Amino acid sequence: MFDQKHYDNCDFGNSTQLAPFIQNDQFESVTYYHKCTTPGQIDYISCSVSRHCQQFGQRVMVRTSSSINTHDEVSGEWLIHVQSLDRILRLLGQRSDPSTGFLIFDRGYQTEELANQTMEWIWCGLDHCPTFADTWKVATNADCEGAINTLMGFVSRKR
Image (tube, rainbow, N blue to C red; front, side):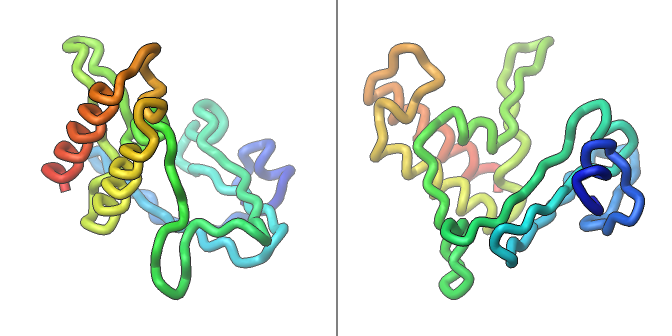
């Protein structure tokens, strides 16, 4: 979005479109990688689909850090370290089907690269068991390891 005022008001005047809008009868996921290049810069990003910004709050302010990186430009290695199963479940888009109670995960495996990165974050949880399984009130190492292996199998099969 153009600036803070435009962001606050969900006003897309003078804004730059970052990803294409796809309209059809199917749900289409659009991925956008925002390259943070200027330390200290604040970028205002929002979904311009009708009501997504204003009503559903689909917007974010991104401040570029001068000292923290998430991706090594030379090696291509991700530098993000996840220490929480809850964060992994949010990354995967966890939601529950109200009619069946089944958990649904609809993100984190659409491409080979994304699936591999998601599995790396999940696998990292083994070093943090049982505290990694913070979504349960009482979690044992076996509970934690079971959750990790289940998610690893799911993402591996879905890619």
